[in-house]
Image (cartoon, rainbow, N blue to C red; front, side, top):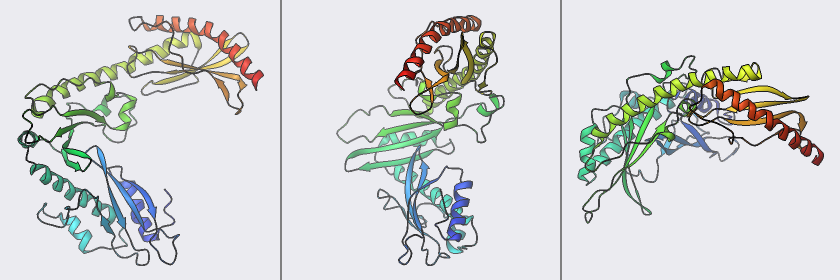
Length: 378
C-alpha cells in the first residue's frame, strides 16, 4: 500500500504498524477528510483479526493537525465498548501512556495504541460472554479458563440469532516448524478450533451441539490441510475440556504423517528422474511440485507435477506444456490438469513412476496432435 499520500508523520506510524504487527492487521477504505486538499489522506479502516474472524475500526486523523492523536470509531455491534473504562479491565500502562502522552514523532505509538485497545476489546468480549444467560456457555467458560489466549465473542443482530464464539489455540507437544527440514516459516504455525454455541432459548429444553471448525495459519497448507481433517464427533453432554485433548492427539498423529509424506513425495520425484532425467525445477522443502522436460520423438514438452498433501492416497495432477506451440495470447499451449491415469497408493514408488511415464508416452502423442490443431486455429 502506498503511504505517500498521508502526511509524513502519519505515514511513519502506519509503516511501523503494518511491518511490526504480529496480528496481520490490514488497512482498507483509505480516504481524506481534508477540506482544502482532498488528495491528502488522513483516515482509513483497520481490519484486525479477532476470534478467527475480523473486526473493523475506523481510524480518523486530522491531516490539518497531524500532531494530534487519532480518533477511533468502533463497530456498530460494539456501542458499549468503552476501552478507557475501568469497568472492562485495568487500563494497560502502555496504552495509558499512548493516550495521555501522545508524541507524533514516535512512530511506534499507533501500534502500541491499537494493541492496547485490542487487549481491552478481548476483556470486553469476555465480560459480554460471561453475562450471557446460558448455563452451558457459563460452564464451558469455567472449564477452559486455564487455557491461554482463548478469544470469545458474542454475536447478535436483527437478522441472526445470538451466538457465542470461541477461538481456542490447540496445544500440541511438538513444534511443526522444527519437524520440517529446511522450514522457511518465520512464525510458528498454529491450529485453532472455532466453537460456536447457539444461545439456548427459554422454551428450548435440549441444547444443540456446537458448530466446530478447524482453522490454521495459512502457510501450514503447504504441509497439512485442516480441511482434510475429520473432526471427532461431539457426543451428548460433552464439554470442551473433554473434547480438546482427543482432538489435539488426533492432529499430532496426522501432522506426523504429513511430515512423513514429504519423504514419500521426494522418493517419487527421485524415481521419476530414472525416466525423465533431472527436474527443471522442484519444491525442495515440501515436494509439492516438480517440472521435467520430456520428449516424444522431436516434440519437446514440459510435464508439471502437482502433489496433494494426501499423496500417495491421492495421485498427483499433471499438466503438459508445449515448448514449440503458442496460443493466441502468445503463451505456451497447455493441457488441463490430468488426474485420470493408472494409479494405486499401494504400489512402490518405482512402479508408480514407471506406470505414470508409460501413460505420458501415450498421452504425448495426443498432446502433440492437440498442439498442432491449436496452431492451425491460431
